[in-house]
Length: 65
Image 1 (cartoon, rainbow, N blue to C red):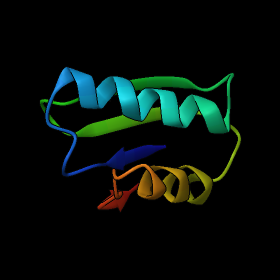
Image 2: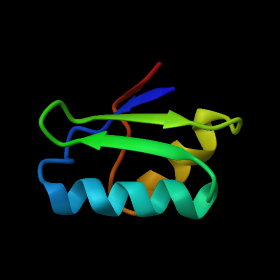
Image 3: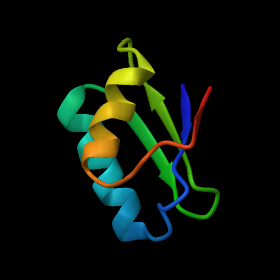
């Protein structure tokens, strides 16, 4: 799945986003790119779980595919 996070603008943000995602699913493979503001997640869990956790951490998801 791919999520877009509009306010992920730096490597520090990308690291924080990755930590949030892996707190939901420790086995998830995460690629966070602050240049495109996209996060690719390989996980069997639904995107809604990640979106809710990211929202709570201050990184609202603006789109998901």
